[in-house]
Length: 394
Ligand SMILES: Nc1nc2c(ncn2[C@@H]2O[C@H](COP(=O)(O)OP(=O)(O)O)[C@@H](O)[C@H]2O)c(=O)[nH]1
Ligand SMILES: [Mg+2]
Image (cartoon, rainbow, N blue to C red):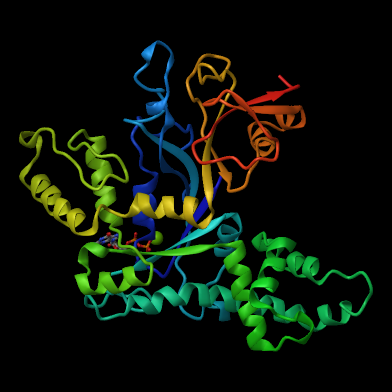
């Protein structure tokens, strides 16, 4: 399962974001385990379900696996311990942080978009701290940490590199295996920075480490606590590609939806109150204030942050494998039972392996269920594809 990590300094709202994103009502939570451990849960990305556009058998209104045409696909989410400046010098970049980082495919950097906490996470007045400083801090901190590890091994690596047949890329990947950095990531970072590793000085190596992290652990920031932030600050952050969010707002809404007080699907720009009379005065006031905040921000930004990490940073597409391409079902007649988050460029054969190793090994060919045509084995799948895999394995 794809896993995202929520990282940032203390008090920016990581745990609130985590609680909001992993709190799903029964309609959405189609995954059996919502909590893996205290800091590790199941969240969902939202995608339009193709069932709405399909000629379903018997004129079925939908597939039964989506909510009003929205598919919620499970991903792992980790609430990472807070990181403070200069952590790479030994002030708290602990084993747990690294363990969490290793498990993550991408990182959502939660920033206090209201600027109401200092660099260490202590409360200050709104706008007293510049969130732009925080945006740079996390990647900078992680880069210096990777550099610190590499630097320790560098002299030895340079000696070994004199030997014939020694792969520096593989050796670097091995040193950083704890972060699940691959030799391909190393190659990507070399190409991106144009570095000559044998000649590199310290600044060049630091830049290389930055590129390495970007390749292995892509990261996007989100300006949380945006409900408290002035518009000009949010506009400046948006310009830097950092969208606003209110994790507290999302958490309140999901709780209200669970209690039946509002109609809201994560990622909706607004919500509805079916029965105002059912609300207490404070509930009504809270929800009205939240409606105003969402109108200003365009939603709570929590679902968007999850979607952006999976579909944007990681470039995933959603593909639906079926066994019966005329009815869009599996062997038990369930319509579009599964949604797979595949890499961009994944082929039908990759999908077969994602479904099951044996199905992959027995792969014969694939059929596009929409056109009923065979597709080439090496043809990249498209977002929303419905694919029948024909395999020798059953
Ligand atoms: N106003 C506002 N407060 C928030 C929001 N998200 C979190 N908080 C508050 O910020 C404080 C720190 O949140 P927490 O999730 O514990 O931060 P963490 O240390 O990063 O895990 C708590 O008082 C939260 O209630 C938000 O979107 N808006
Ligand atoms: Mg926390």
